[in-house]
Length: 140
Image (cartoon, rainbow, N blue to C red):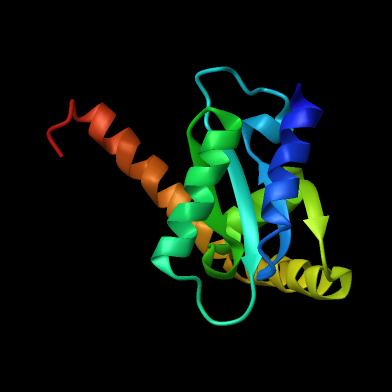
């Protein structure tokens, strides 16, 4: 069933010429998907910006195919952390231009590495804040 579902999604997404490459990621790609999970897709869009109606139509059609909730990430606008997750664990559905895709992935990795120290500092600060809240019984 999984391969058939992914093939149907691929067949649909490939009909949209502005999608250069597409991935499925998250719990579905990790093999941890359940009937209560959504399915996460990521697309790279070329040309002029994707219109809200086109984005919603893509998402709605994917939901109809998958018969479940769908999250659709536009790689062009995704954060470095999200792109890292997608490229680290995602399953590529198709690519029309592997050179463009490879360049985008490399750029995304460099972008993530540039931001990594800020993510780590933010995480550390958040943990320290939570510990202080717990130690003070939530009284700041």
